[in-house]
Image 1: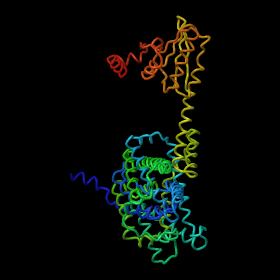
Image 2: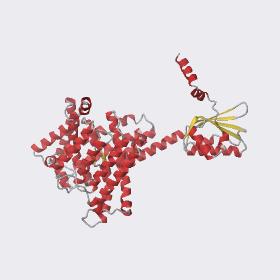
Image 3: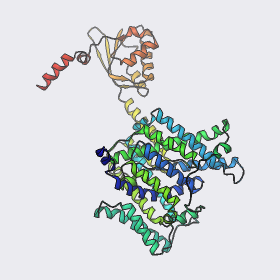
Image 4: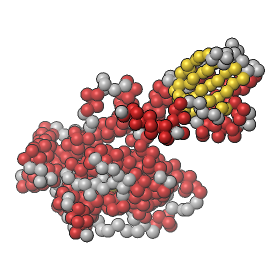
Length: 537
């Protein structure tokens, strides 16, 4: 028992300190995303707290941070606007439609976990992963540039600009240099504290978390505990019209949330050289969104920026995420005044260092060393992440990669032809037979000019799909229409079963007897063992 506790608390100090740093970074992010979605800042902060703590406890990836995200906020804008238009002015009906949508989104995500759909993240190719990381780094960078504007949307100039640049540079300098002196102190937290002290004691007139919230129309961070939203059930009618309205939004939000969460999970896996549980994460994300919707949060998913801050700060266990969520609640309840004094420049500096650490700089070095198709995928995913959103970028990248893979494999189908002494023509098929290669497969045969007896040997080929089975079926019919005999050898078992189901005549053309030495070897373990021992000698 002592050993179990020791292992669980070995990284407690790093988890706690890193969690505090993440909590500080979560505040302006959650507030900003709430403004983007068109809802009150507390709706974003409550979402960050509830999603953060639930996924930290029950999620499939310790050390990963979840909360309100921009990828979801941009979809919520039109949902809230359309919902508000359905009710009276000032009724804020859109907010309650948002809560209902987030609940439905959570149900969909939990179903994805129940049916173990999380494993399909393995189908995402590495160029898509690199493009996702690069695109997200650019998005994070561009989002921080908005902090260099005043309340009117004009860029800082003169002294304001230079002070902002100086404080950002100082934050980045501390985060870069401190680990070279000692790794025992969390560089992000120390940088925020130092820059905050300079601003407070130097009485510098710069943007702070408090001014950021007030400029956005909020009244500050002060708030209470999340309350159960009973008004959802009275203000949002449970009927077919409501389902038609919120279901498309719920599907999009669920897809974006899961893709971003599972991609972030993969990235954290690579950084920590450990393995998370994708299906467990789907269940946790879904459960968290259901709770968040019921208690007045805007929903969310994994946050790559905050997750990287946590990992780089030494956070590895569930404790780091739990501390981040609880500290965020403490800030809302008791320390709002102190947090409101943190300069935005310090948080921008932290995020800029995250951008530098997130971007896959090695992608520039390997551009001329990888296939051109992978370069296209990498660049396309990066661009689409910036222009549209993560879900569109990843889906497009996977589709492009799949099409390239299919095209390349379609060109690998080969047919080696030879004649037996008895006049039988043998076609030895090499390469995968699937929907992309059936045209090339059909071109290999000369039905009219072939002799009376033909054999097609699939020993070096794999029949992959229904299109391939249909091509074989049509080939047999063509030879039989010419009054010629055709035999099929070494078909895979699953293919033979499907062919037998499709037509009884295949029992006449498929040769069941195995006459290939490799098959005999597999059937005779003693011969295989003897041959292996002779090979070793």
